[in-house]
Structures are given as structure tokens and as C-alpha cells.
Length: 140
Image (cartoon, rainbow, N blue to C red; front, side, top):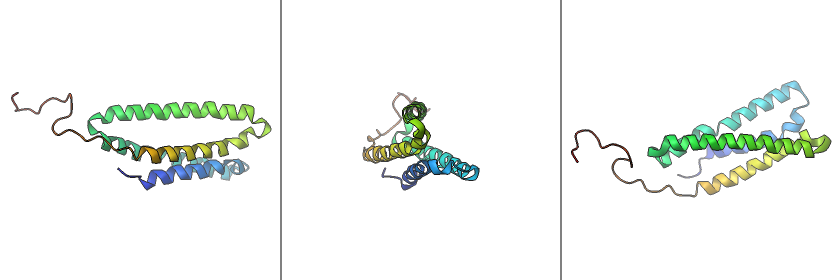
């Protein structure tokens, strides 16, 4: 499994969008474009991540996807919490600090992803998956 350049580009694009949020909020059109770009880059990472999880362990795919969704929702919740802290303690510039803080977190996400793809998937045993029933017609 190597590094897939497309998700890395999406996360890097998300960092650029987040860094550009403070000046983008001055106009309705620029804010709308920034929000659209934010939504596209943020959600574009999910399908490749889900594909990678299935490729790593096909027999555990549903479990891996549910854990991935839980981690995504936990990250969204923690992001809201952290954003609230930035606004609360950022004073008058609190809103303008959200984008740069978010961009910094995307750098952390990229580093984490690069470390994560270096972990090798365990070799899959030959034959049916553990716990899966034997194919019909085989007597044990």
C-alpha cells in the first residue's frame, strides 16, 4: 500500500483553504467559494480511506469502516471543541485564528497519514476468513 497522492493532495488542499478563510469571509462570493472548497477537500478524503481499509483487511471491512466513521465523528467533535477554545481565548481575533489553527492541524494530519501508510498490512491467511462458514459441499 503506498501513499496515495490523491488523498494527500486533498488534505493539503484543505490546509490551503483553511489558511485562506480569514480573508475569504469579507465577501459573500469569496466566502461561498471557500466553503464549497472546504467541503469538497474535507470529504474527498473519505472514499480513498475506506478503499484502503478494505484493501488492508477485506474480511474485517465493515468493522474497519465503522471504526473509521467513529474516528471521523470524534475528530469533528474535537474540532468543534478546539475551535470553541480558539474563539474564546483568541479575543477579538478569535475568528481569524480558526483558519490558521485548522491549517496547522492539517499539517499534523498529513504527517500522521505518512506515518500510517508505512505500517504494513498483516499477511492474510489462505482459505476462508476466520469465523466465516466453510463453503457448501465440503464435509468436515
